[in-house]
Image 1 (cartoon, rainbow, N blue to C red):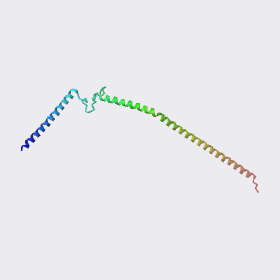
Image 2 (tube, one colour):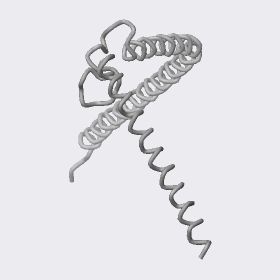
Image 3 (cartoon, rainbow, N blue to C red):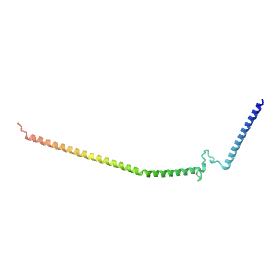
Image 4 (tube, rainbow, N blue to C red):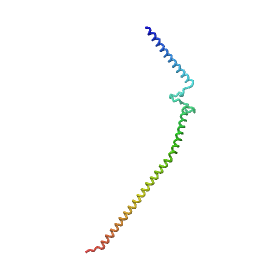
Length: 149
């Protein structure tokens, strides 16, 4: 029986401690509410929690700091890109020169093939015409020298 009053005292102490903590939390929340009333809402009364609010365009706002950082990073990346382009330009120029030389060599080869084909075709046509004239002449000679009986 003596154990029950001790447990009751322990339970009461725990309960009092929890009530004290709840009161402290309430006081802290009240202090925060009073501070917001004195200093103003950090979002300017807007419902979003970005922290920028209507003052986002002021020079010292977080938005302006982010914008300045983005501009600085953009400039750095642009400078790096220009340096990289300057570094690879000789390689791309050599590659383009090799491509041009290859294309010109292929064009010369195609031109030579077309010329040879034309000359061969012309020679064949000439030989055929010569053969036709020769056959006509031979046929006429045979016909004129033929003796009919």
